[in-house]
Length: 486
Image (cartoon, rainbow, N blue to C red):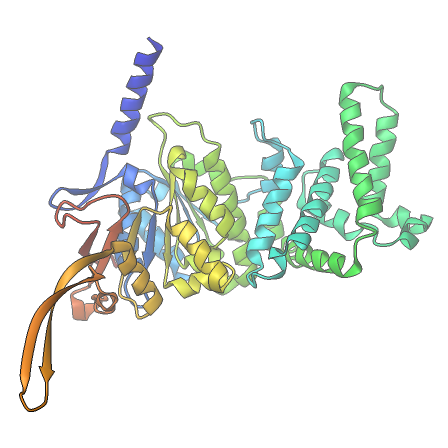
């Protein structure tokens, strides 16, 4: 009986995943299951990638009821998304998250209070902060060094745990704990300084409170946590190399100061009105803090949302009625967090979640993902977990060669001729079989870029990983896409 029910549930899941979202042409379909394996769109500036393949996917996802989270890089993106929602009947689901929208997301309180087994764990909360700090440090150098990374982790773990022991739920308390942490033995021996240090006062307050309570397994557990925190701040942190401590503090405070000032302070400290889980209910959340306007503040805000959205998706309990959800990121190079991106892409299909990433070329990505060889390896790790890729026109040789390599090579016959000069001139001709690209890299430089001169149609070559197009009998297909200019 149980096996029969399991088979029925599996069948229902399969039927949902095979539901067609749109048809390429001639029985080549793009299904919900295809969408959940994510999409990468590459094309140079002016290739019409956003208004053709990007707009097409956004429209089909909206029409099919997906929950969506949109990041923004440019100011005009918000108005375009609003028009999409109006055109596809999703205006009521639209939520704009911006400094003047009246929407708030107290992420720290939500992380502490959420109703599941992972709530309120200091290490998990600290990991959110560390992820945003590292992703926001785009130089790809200091934050990648193991020792400083470890020191930052320990600092955040202990500061967050001390905040939790005191019952606080605001980022400003973490900031003040780190700001007032002892840095040398002179401070520890100065009674007046100890009284002015919030970090030390809170540790003393927790210790005093525990002493006044009866000894129980729970108080023993709290005492062990406090002892670990005291060991860190009174010993490890104080005796850390001044240079290392200075670097770690700089990493934290350059990030933390932005969240201690408006607009981020107000956006993330008020009573929560919108959160990542709302996309599961069908909301379309637009993060209206475009990077080109708000710079690092906008990036920090959106990286925080992106990471917490991914976490929320990975906590979902899925059944055959679960709504697909997607994060839609144009100018993806500004939002790269490679470790978390790769992890998410490797599991997201199981949680009915996916992404659409749009960027210009591979070198753009490499710079943001650690540079040089490290960036290349990281890109391959991410791209290998994304099933559908659109390649619009591109003048970057490396991107075009990557596309050609994906499609593959085949043996092809080529003619050759020879001529020998001497007393007797002779000619020879023949054929030889050589391994060549099925689609030459130069083909990607000649694709139509939309606009009035192309009747507002753009071309792309689409590659599907492990899937064959019926019309070509191969893993790739050249498509013409009408620009969607609302």
